[in-house]
Amino acid sequence: MCVAQLLTAHSLPLRQALGSLCSPWAAPRVGPLPPAPAMVRISKPKTFQAYLDDCHRRYSCAHCRAHLANHDDLISKSFQGSQGRAYLFNSVVNVGCGPAEERVLLTGLHAVADIHCENCKTTLGWKYEQAFESSQKYKEGKYIIELNHMIKDNGWD
Image (cartoon, rainbow, N blue to C red; front, side):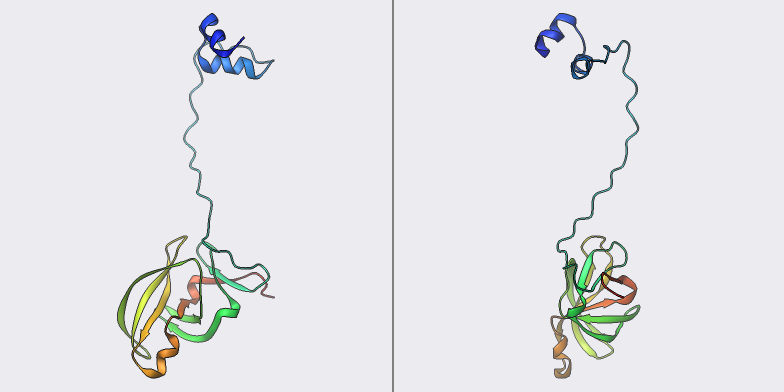
């Protein structure tokens, strides 16, 4: 007997009819259905734009553990961020850039864009877009990440 015939023949609600078809031991339900359980908040799984290779030492966001940079891309550990010590990296992943603006930093005038973690949106540091002094041109296109926003991850013994 198909489901449509079963429903017509017995005038059972769909859930009761299907419930008795799915399990040979289930008796048809008599009476109202129990109340639905309270809504359960399901957290969104973390999906990063890029995953860095597991065999290399890497730096990750301290707030959500999104991968940020390989240790091989570290240029210098002797930088100062707005909230403390910072590292200069050649390249980073899983970060977004804000608009560029001119700022007077410890080493002179630069055009910089704040960078944030794409996963948790925490501001991590900035990207050097342009350096106006010739001695600072090596920073162009490089990234500053403040130490209090990153952790060492994978392979640090």
